[in-house]
Length: 171
Length: 86
Image (tube, rainbow over all chains, first blue to last red; front, side, top):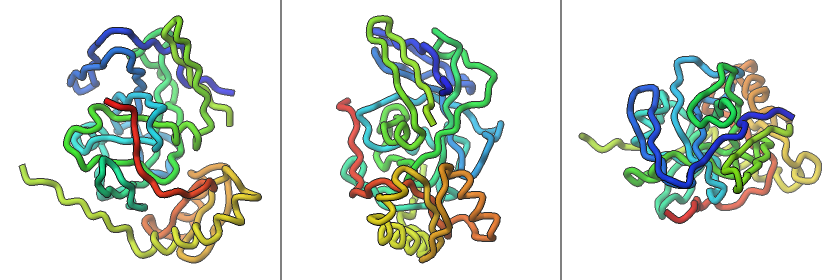
């Protein structure tokens, strides 16, 4: 059983976070932030040129991963049309096509949200594609949902007293 | 800025592969629940515990991206995204 995210803090107050590009984003209170990258499928290692960006852990999301088109274009390092279109999904009352992709979760330094270990990120094989939103600026930040936990065999440990989250793989 | 035009159509090969996956899904759920399965057109390529391995298998057979699918063997339901209230 491998631990991917160790004692990652979430906060009861608003904070900001800086991307490697220097862009800053607002993190609302009690949002759990993971650092992730997207890639096309079939890769055993993450291409080092693919950037990392924040995603909110949202177990209320019934898909694997959802991102606004603005963030996808600006942050992912990928080109939407180069990801295979799979099937249509209803998102914000509009039809979108799920795109084939995989996701990588970065390993944090325990008790630190934005300090990351040098180790290879954990590969999340995404089932049935990611969703790129047709609605401007929605979701406000990328969301990592329950379907990704299911397909990757992940366990989530949430300590509400100490405001810490750990994620481990059981496969 | 010009609005980006996004093509919502999947390739005929992917649609055919998806149709074959859905056709076989009921019987696969019994013996292969949770595994990954690859389809190229009407043909099942194989099962694996790894999506990546099946991807590489399809590519090594000369099947180009965009002409096959790799899916988990789980119940297939109409997909309506819902998230936490914002």
